[in-house]
Each structure stands twice: as structure tokens, then as C-alpha cells.
Image 1 (cartoon, rainbow, N blue to C red):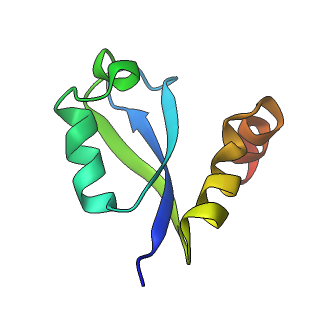
Image 2 (cartoon, helix red, strand yellow):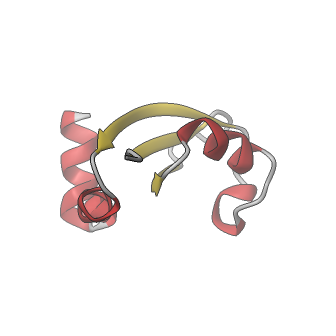
Length: 80
């Protein structure tokens, strides 16, 4: 069984820039963001991992990834 991860990364140079994403391979994903392979995150690299959580399946992870919503961002800033 493959675990899925939801992570929050923060730009090292632009500390107000954060990105929330879901991935099957956390160890591979951060280097991909730092290599500029994601259009959204390329302009704010390099990134550092701030927080992550493991989920037993993709659907639970994607449901939690909805922290991208406004209320979810408020929760993340306050609690994570």
C-alpha cells in the first residue's frame, strides 16, 4: 500500500509564499519544486518543507489538500 502525503512548503526567499500540495513521493516532490518543474512554484524557489501529513490513500489526502481554500489557509496559518 502506498501512502499519500499532503505537504506545505514555504519559499526561502519570499517567506509569505506557501504552497500546499499532495504527492505520493514526498522525497521526490520537493526537489522537483526546487528544480522549477512546477509553473506555480518555479518563480519563488528555493522551497523548504514546513509541514506534512501522511494519509492511507489518495482520496483522503486530496480531501485534506483542500486546505487551499480560504478557510483552510486560515486554519493552516493558525494551527500548523
